[in-house]
Amino acid sequence: MNVDETMPVAARPKPDVRNLIIREVISWVWVILAFLLITGTIVQARVIPSGSMERTLLVGDHLLMSRFGYEAELPMTPLHMRLWRDPHRQQIIVFRAPLPGTPDYIKRLIGLPGDQLEIREGVVSINGKPLSEPYRADPPNPTDNYGPVTVPPGEYFMMGDNRDDSYDSRYWGFVPRDNIIGTPVMVYMSIDAPEETWNPGHIRDRMAAYAGILLHPSVVRWRRIFKLF
Image 1 (cartoon, rainbow, N blue to C red):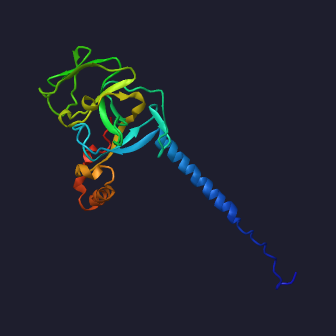
Image 2 (cartoon, helix red, strand yellow):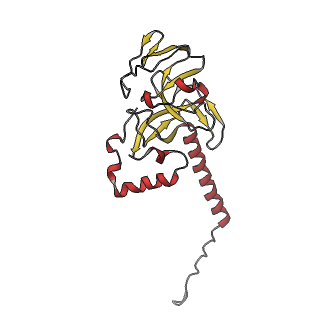
């Protein structure tokens, strides 16, 4: 072979654009399905918009909520299914409010199915015995009276820890088991901002609160981050 001769170079195959697009679409479908599975059956993020659970939960607390075993749903649809776990007394519960057009509530479970519940001068009694409630924000209010009532089968009686500022079962009744969504696990962020910031529809206020962290880090309640329940 002469020195000026060169070996032929094999031509590189042209990429199959159609196959590349199909692979990309499939990968994104798997990502979306995984997201729907996680948010629909395992964990969701929530934010506290009111003071009904103070001191336990503060306005602006951002929570990770476990749905595992309580309920499965298809996000962004009304489709949901009750699972095998049932809540226990004094557990903090996230549930669909039994009021049309109302956002989900977060309260403490006080009365179980079959319990006889009574409130006298702010003291809760279950089946004739006073309930110890060290989590309450304030001492019992002597004007707070309710019952006695018997909690129906398959339903629960919910109350806020901040009893004087809580719209709960004392006013709108019992919560069906099918309304229970899950229970909080951890605070992952807590921002000191007005209540209206966290109400539905206030997207601009929320974005301003998040952006404000860069200029005023003190609005973050750093000691509450990673608080477990």
